Image (cartoon, rainbow, N blue to C red):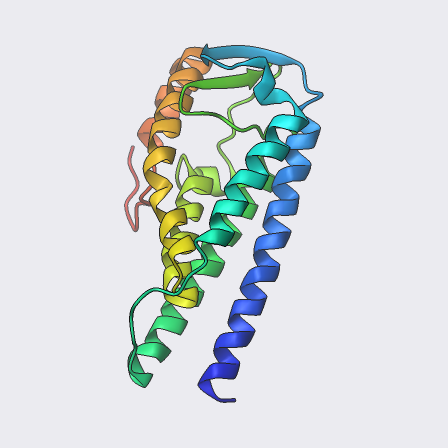
Length: 207
C-alpha cells in the first residue's frame, strides 16, 4: 500500500470514528433534555436546553469547520510524512476513544456545560470510575488529543481550530469544578486530591 492510499484509509476511518462519537454525544443530549434539573451555577439560559439551539449552533459550528477545511501551507518529506501519520493516528483515535469512553461512562448524567454557566441534574452523582479515575476531565483531554492528532493526520486549518477550542474548555472545566464542589463538598475535594485534572499520573499514587 502506497503512502497516499494509507493516508486516505486513515482519514476515512477517522471520519467514520468522528461520526460515531458525535452521534453518541447527540444521543446523550437528547436524553438529557428530559432529565429533571438540579443545581445551577452561573447563567444558564433556558434556550440552551432546546433542540433548536443545538441545531442552529451545530449548523454554524460545523459550517465554520467546513469553510476552514483548507490545507495547511506545509510540505512534508516522505519520512516525516510517515511519522506524522503514525503519531497523528495514535493521538487522533485515542482522543476520540477517550471522548467516547467518557460520554458512555457518564450515561444518563451526560450534559453540556457552558463557559458562563453549569447545570447539574436533580439526581446528579459524582462519577469517579472509568476514565474519570484517570483524569477529572477525560472528554476535554480527548478533544485536545483529537485536535492535535488531526492536525498531523489531516493537516487542515479546521483541526487547528478544534485544538484551539481547548482554551475555552479550560474555562468550562473551571465552572464545572465549582458546581461539583458546591454539590458534593468533601467527596469532591477527596476526588481532586486523588485524580489530576488533565495530565494523568504515571507510576505515582497519591495518598
